[in-house]
Image 1: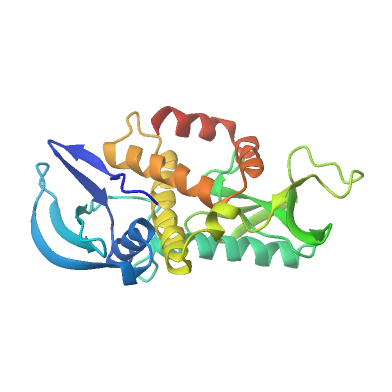
Image 2: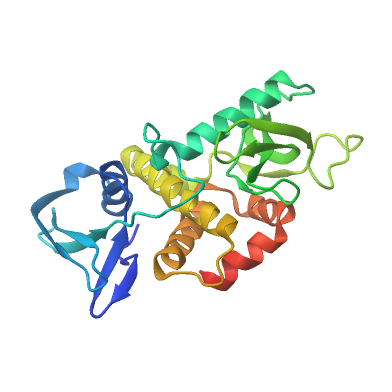
Length: 262
């Protein structure tokens, strides 16, 4: 990943929203990559112009370059907040695991089914819809095929609500369309530790984006706009280009909102 600085800007300094130590580590790994190529040389604490605590971290790369990162948190009164034992960096793993387990328990479940990233359900309040594409071998290589199913999961409890056919799926036209080789080439190009950090950082950002949508505020704060922009870049990295339109098909209103505020 490049050195573009994420986060909201106040004055001449940019701030990175990170709500836990785990998320700070995930951000650093996603941005700087292999930890053997960089190190933290200083940490200082201060206050942002809006009164939030700031942790200033200076990073030295193996090239000798110095990069400053300023982390902020926000204590939101969020009705969708996870319990104290849960971490938003693990949110995506938890919700995708729940969707897969429910799909397996409610056939027809296709071998090789993968749960992809959640979007708000159009039909159920406070719920997420997860497309379930299929990973299979064709022409000697692994490929991802268009989702025949969708699972709906409650965002707060992670309890599955239901499963059904993906909008537009036609069972008589099997197999569904092949969307590309798997895993995505851009994700494969990352160092494994950087990839793990990218996924965890995306998980935390995407959780805030989803809950921001459900809150239905008339404005989008700078922090949330930054989360939207970073999340969409991460999703493009972690998914195949031909899969991205399937998110829009699950909830076009959410897709439009994302594009308006990224």
